[in-house]
Length: 373
Ligand code: GN1
Ligand code: MG
Image (cartoon, rainbow, N blue to C red; front, side, top):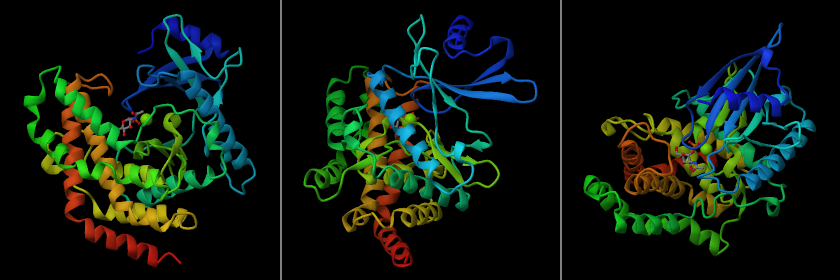
């Protein structure tokens, strides 16, 4: 939790009246940054702000990162202004600037903060089996990609290099495994063997990108269900949050990663892995919403690799958890010793289930596509 002295510094930088300050609530969401809601009593209303401390261990170039986020959020907000929609202020994040006109503030204890408008009457879901919500999640990710098609990708810094370069992630895993610096290899031999057996899968998307068989677009790259805000009442999706990894990429990253997180019947860190299953109804609902929104821009080759992308993105995520576990938990926040290993197990279980029904899932995609027009 943020110390009182630091909070005072934040209030000063953002010109917030501490006399109106009511409380601060930490939101336990996300494995990287720390997030807070600030409440101010304005008499007739309560004003909220969304404050985040950026994890500079993960995002080593926070200035460039904030430049990206400002560019993207301004672009989105300008576009929304011209659209014939209601509720415009809730359809994209807005960065709040400091009194010295910066998109961030660094505290005297060297913590890096940024502030956003608070999206009112909205919520996120850790998981959901409500097909309407899931269908809207698919639409949200498709729409996000659509809105950014004319964004100049050369303006973006690469906030984390090779973020979804699965072969590089695999190589990093091998290096960490080789060192076994925490002597944890012995605790996870099954997971290691499964990871090694998946090597041939790792190159598929990168090969398609390198051979220019699929296009590079501006993508979100972290399309977990809980990175989508939904209207509290209508369950319509409002906007995508957590824009730190918006970078040039393949839409397969976003589709695969979203299915990975949405179609898990349990939490990402469910300890009883026998409870973890890949939900086919969720897969259908999400794919329906997603494909409806991108049907005019998605290519044949991208469609042909949608199921591969689920396998690869879910595997990559599990591999990153496993690598971090072997490496001594330096990257993802953990609540207990084996947390990253538990997370890895759920992801690998999902990969196995998708592999086992790959042909059927391919057929379902074809059916959805056939019924679109
Ligand atoms: C991290 O910050 P959060 O929890 O939205 C990670 C994603 C992983 C995800 C797994 C910058 O996302 O890549 O898929 O955890 N973000 C970063 O839950 O590494
Ligand atoms: Mg994130």
